[in-house]
Image (cartoon, rainbow, N blue to C red):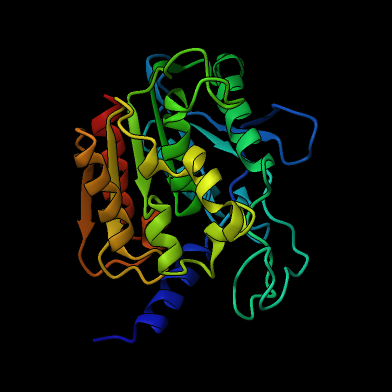
Length: 300
């Protein structure tokens, strides 16, 4: 049996080895440099009624990972006949975070980049999704907005689940839309989908605690941002998870599926044998083809 850490490192290296793929066009949804969406037209020449896949990248909501690392995945989906919108958003800065014992993180010996920006990370995802129909009409004229599927990897999987649940946020929330989104569904890839368990397991170095501003803010802010607490949504949802994921363990996805069931909703959970965290977005991996098929099942 391979060493889990070595396997994860090899899978990450493979996923990140592909050259970045330039988009066909880019549009802004705000004034900040990170408030942009890249668009990839379907490569099969179809000129109408094409499903629109919205991609939200991962990276523990930290600035180290931006949208460029997931562009080979976006291009892969475009080559499978989808129109693709790859969303950038503001993430935690690269400056060292508070050290051990700080009330801001509660992490022992953290010192790494802080995860996320409150509330800007959520402001941006909400603004991008609200602006997308009008932008896609210009930049992806072949896309059918009635066939929109949200997908995201890791922290981006969390954001995809959260974006699909905004209509169940408390009245008065700045992120709540006027009506439920017109979505075919969500395909969340190894998502940080259950904040309670993710905090308990210290997923991604305590990223959830950092994202929400520290342990003193967890309960208050999780009520508005934890997908497991924003159920039921009425949106078809599938989670795709590697059984051997050591970055976001499968237990996190399973906890979300259990929370959905308790709320009277079924969330699909596809568990892939001998797959870790990164093959889900690696065009060279068989797992990526499974992801594309899960998206297609919802989109069509």
